[in-house]
Length: 305
Image (cartoon, rainbow, N blue to C red; front, side, top):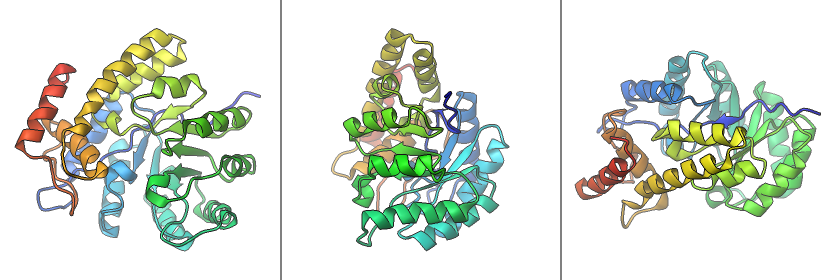
């Protein structure tokens, strides 16, 4: 059987540029989508963690997705996060997502509520039945406090419930077994790693969803193309360069990992002239002048300014 997953390659989680007042910066978001498409991405993941979806209001999420879909104009698939606490809330958001023209929805396990594994499986089955779009699971236990079981994911894939998974679990052993289990399924196994993508591709990953891909989509395009061609030396060299670029997320001090990562990505995009400001959602704080200078030095070293 020749596998044909719907979603493969480079699918960056699109950051959501904000104005200094905290509104969606639509002009910057349009430029970012254009930049990513020019960089050769295979898809766009709107309203994921790097999009600050947990911080945005409902109207802001709708507006951001509208802009991404319109700017993309059907060039690549747009998958959209429907990150909500419980099933009915996800389904409501999935209906909006479908109406806005997205090509697939992405959902986590339920969170805040205490949930049994049988309820998690029922959650995904009910979303898929209602969404009328392909559904991808988002495995991110650091945020939702539940690790999605590999056997459940593969069962849902075999039943046609799930079209793929974005794995941000950090459990690389489980990821390898998931790749093995998906070998005969049209089920996209996507890694959320930034710095070991070459290893994940060698192990059978179908693609990558890297936050750093906002800053350097061309680099991830070269990495995936080298891996597909079997040129693992070139893939490793590109990955090593991207690992050094990833140091932008360490510029922020005394803040959360979320703020440090988003702050690094947005500051780099601002310095590259793609977005207007490095503003982030409250209560996070944007990188200051000293931290911005540190990001600038890393970009200069990478030849990206």
